[in-house]
Image 1 (cartoon, rainbow, N blue to C red):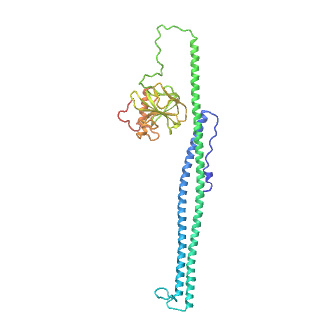
Image 2: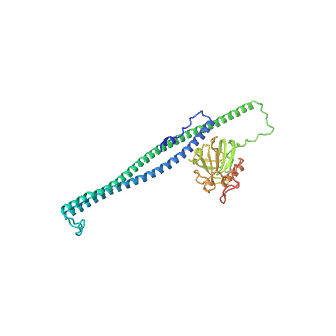
Image 3: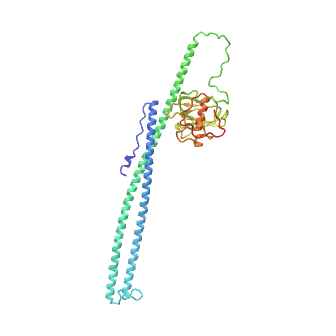
Length: 397
């Protein structure tokens, strides 16, 4: 496993350049690609580490078994040697008798012969046994030495993999931190651009008003009626197009809800109570959900998620005249649709198993029809008919 550290060196984080929307978007894309590559690298390192660790456990177990066997052989040798010596001494002392009066070599002999027998038994027989044991012991030593060498190699490999995995994990953490900073900078730039545009528009309106005030006022031929309510005002219990003030509004696909791109304020659909504003796992971390308290959808929960800067808080009462947040031109656009009753990040399309990653769902199509009935452009179906069906009693538009 030589060179493991070099093979898994994490890519360097991109250097921050000028603070521009285009530059930040390109940097976000680059960092996300780096994170995906680093994530795959870490998965390979973990798999390799697990395999080597299993191999080390097997080598350790075999080495322990070999050492235990070697110790048992030593004990067996000592016992055999003691037994042979006892037999030889018994033969010498008893005049050649071994068991049940049988001569050591079939007939009694002189004490000198018995001494020779003792020497043969204690010397030759033991020497043969010792030689055989030495051979076995040598083999055991060789096996143990081989296993110890393998154990050292496996331990070194595990150390290299551990160092490499730590380096890759640190690189991922650095990239994630950089991604958070860049996304935050991008959001700030987009919000600042939107506010600057609003300020310019207000200045232009004031200039037009000043020019108009300089013109002579011609009295109308008929009495002036009481001014009507602003165009954005919506009566209580009624629904209004929540995207009516989003600039550059462009409809995109229908999936769990309906996707759009654009910039500017997004309103509540109607009267309701905010349940959440931020849920981890959604792009940008924004998931504004609110339960409708009036109209045909009373009791249902609506969500608006992704590239939105929230301007409301959980528990806040909203109406169709309430701005939920500011849509900014981020990398993901926005998505709005039917949330599940808890309003904590899941959608009705998810709960009913309708969404598989890129398809249009029955709940998304239903919300698109609602937006169209209020004057917003509908989303783009990816499949017709959409996947799944609405539960009984669900409102249609």
